[in-house]
Image: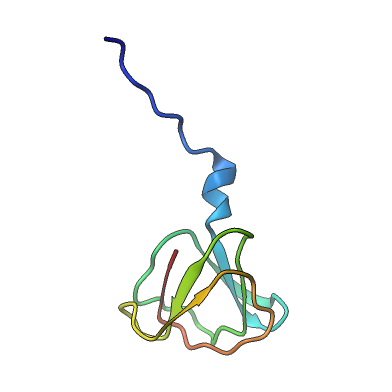
Length: 88
């Protein structure tokens, strides 16, 4: 029986799941991008906006171990959230 190959995930698909956190509203200022689940994030600013690709949902959590989470299914240009942890 010939080997079974699964299609590799394309670079575009990998980027699709990435979110970007911004220090200022309306996606401005210092930013920090995350491509997968991350605990105990040490970003040097309070998150004031978040950019999420269409069709992807993320949990942004105030706690370092996925506690105090809020789900975001679209970008938010105006918010205030302490850094903590994130996961798709």
